[in-house]
Image (cartoon, rainbow, N blue to C red; front, side, top):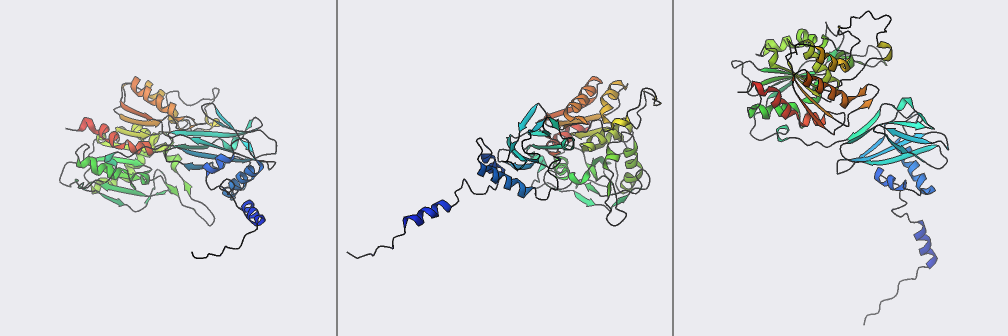
Length: 442
């Protein structure tokens, strides 16, 4: 039997000291919101509070003022489509701080020791959102009124993904366009898509205009892929698509910023944007390609303010567009409180669609306009869309759908549980395009 010498004995006191100084998984610095959420469960120890405080301070170290509440919540998505949201606010020690959200929801924040900082973490399921505001001692912070987040996980349809054997059209980025008439001084990016099936000697192509165009012609699920697949399957006619970004006014000096003209173009409910397309952008396209001159062969599509802009263009210029696709359309009241005509000095005729009108007024105008205009309209929205000072966006889309139904329009309103984004709209874009053209299909 071979002799094996024993190892030198380690004093018990050293072993105990080593165990005490080792960090266990429970006391290690948290790396994710889900970890911090466990630390905020009651009862909350001082050690837990300090770890939570360190976590949030590190992530908000670039924020200069955490008392106003206009900083964004921290978001961590989960595999089930939902996620965690983390709020952080600076107030006075001992204050009562509550997060208020629409649908009568509220979450009291946890005070982190006597630091004056407050935190809260909540888990949200897929297809949920919160448009929230901080309240301190019963008074809501005005600067936090626009805060929002949401979760949604709409999947792409097969027609939204590249498929083998399908001819691909050509997408060309055009030289930056400078407006000289309707929006002088603005410059914008734009792209033109021509399907593989287009022929100069064949029938004239249909026309599709996308507002906020850059977001619709790149990446998976974009409209060029959808059009490749649908045109190849002969589910939609051969269509040339124009993707147009809103204009910007370039910075005119050192330290100056460019001015975005999007709201001026999209939220002004007059014929101006449609006229801009007709007089400035589309002439060059008409010269280069054979495009149908019939307005029923022209579709305009967009999301949010781009969606209400699409409806505005067709409403005022039925000679130019008679088909509309609107995703999460901004049919809300964008005018300021001082922009309402006064009863005593109202010089605007009651039947005039004046510059003070906004997309919020369309349901009434649709109901009161007879005969109905020759429009075909696709609407999409989710019941987790925005709810803010401009209005409840989902309810306003419901008002639009109800008005179109009342007045006998050809329309389709697709609803879901999505948030204010174009994800659901892009997911149903294949269905929308097939439906919008189906009366023209042979």
